[in-house]
Length: 554
Image 1: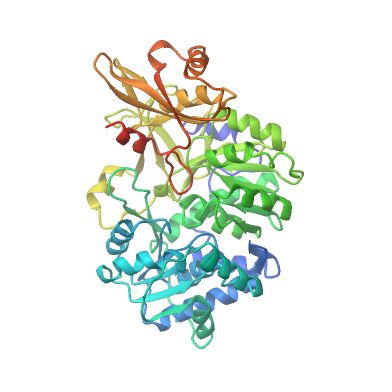
Image 2: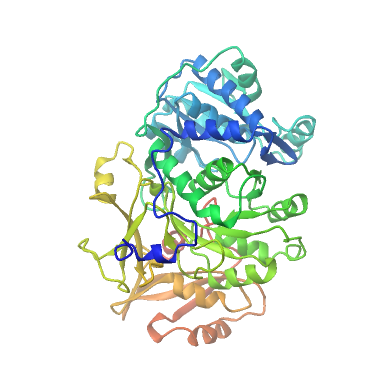
């Protein structure tokens, strides 16, 4: 077994090679079990207001019953479009209990992006924060949506919510005027739900419970069909990996990343919830002071985030003075964790910043470094239980250890396919293996390392140059805050490297930075130009968009 899966020899003690993926027939069965185990524990906290597991249990039943009373049936699609609010887990669990399929939707979407996602998925209902309702009004007639539930940022916050809503609506003016007839409020849905019950239905492991749209950074966004089996397996895999760390019941997890994003959805909203933990929701992760404030309000045990968020925290003057005595680890995903950021995180907080790897199409977690800090910075860790990973060449042939090729994943967490896109599914899942589009290698001891994305690779005079490596070197300069590397056309070599840099120190010059890079990079990898910027284009969760930078260069 360890010859085929050499990573097993490096598993921390107590982690099994495989999980029992049939332990629960559905995600709801796992959640029901969780509600029974921890009724009095706080499940979610947002802006100072907490809900216990028992309250989430009660409210989600009411919400699910209301949705069915509106004529929705098991299998119908419901879009959830809101930032991190207490309403999100209630709506999510309520819809799942009613047999409805979730369509997680980024609230920052433009009307064009909303129209695509709602028409592609065939969503029949939506739960939307009022801040974004004006955009829904623009596209509503093009969709099948008939049931609209509107919520506000302050709606579940009690008396404090009155002041929050007043500030959001009238001081910050964050709610554009809209006119959507026949809508109801979230509170009304909960109240009315008391009058109805959820009709019994029998879920199966292969039922699609979530349509999770890929970010659309390449081409049109596609809906990954995640089933009961996929999400249950990933919950159990994550729980098995976390178990030896001692993190669990009663601990506090900080969730600045939005729950509609696959990373926070599976890790924070589902896995940490199933461990009996309290998840602290941050409404807007870009508001760095609001993230830091939660360290003042809570003894945070685990925090999830992306590299840019950890970096932003480390560079905020108030962060280093916080109390990190309870912090056991930071968990980074969504993009590569840079060595300089991981090292500074450990120095400032005294805890490791652990890198994991996954994709929307793998529910998402596929590999993680050991949580005890014994893993390797710069690696994506070891495949988690019941998961196989391998490296293949362009023809799909497996490559030996140490050779570079595309990473493929196989396991119970791999999606059923893309919704209504059999051709795209066939290109992505081959003989049961998920083609990640990531270029990497496997070390002899089973640790995997990503070299870069296929589409981001730069070809200089026939040599492959990987942006991650260039960025890692540039980030080691103490005056660099953020960096992105792309290839730009060049008559002589086909492409050359250009880097975009946000300064930490205004005195940084191009000459100084290139001199620094020269010590860490061979000639053909050297940036030929530097462009200083005040900020870099990013996705809603803070992932730097190299594609945007390439488009700008023409």
